[in-house]
Amino acid sequence: MTVRFRSKSIADLTLALALAAGLMSTGAAAQQPPAPTPPAGAAAASRGVASAAAVPADYVIGPEDVLSVVYWRDKDMTTDVAVRPDGRISLPLLNDVQAAGLTPAQLRDRLMEVSKKYIEDPSITIVVKQINSRKVFITGEVNKPGPYPLVGPTTVLQLISIAGGLRDYADSKKILIVRNENGRPMSYLFNYKDVVSRKNLRQNIELKPGDTVIVP
Figure (cartoon, rainbow, N blue to C red):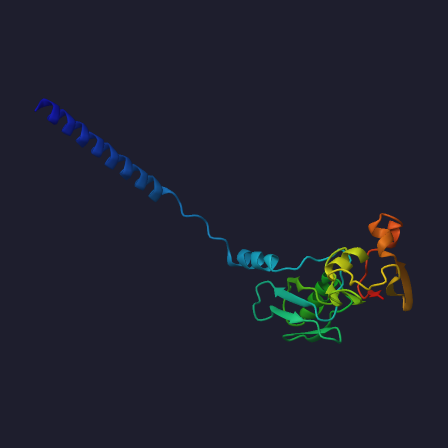
């Protein structure tokens, strides 16, 4: 009988201690302040950054690019726009504004200037969501010819790889890069076999928007 009584007492004491610990934990949790909720503006900014495209250092806005024009404290003026073939964008109140040929910072400054007619002390952010204007082209004896977006530094050899490589009957020694520089057409030769053999690596030039690689 003594053993059973002692065992029961220990069990009751253990249960009481557990209940007390649970109550203390609940009280401490109740006393803790709730986690701060980020302001709506910060959340919107985070979403904008997450959806932004990687913008090259020399980027200027071009046709078919998609921009987000964000007016702080003015939701009616905030909108996503695609740059039209004529280089303009259409915005509420402002109508048509030239965007092509400008950097995002230059477009922001222009919009801030013209917006002062309608908004007191406007604050504007330009987010580049899609870059569709920077393209290079590859044609001829490659597996996947066509236009490709130029969103980062890309060499001739890299573009050939992106296009699925050369076809069996490609003349790999006479590949041509055609480029327009200051209104004048220029051409550069590229010998694929030399480059993959680590010879004359300087011909593996970095491509520029508008370049066309011709694989005979």
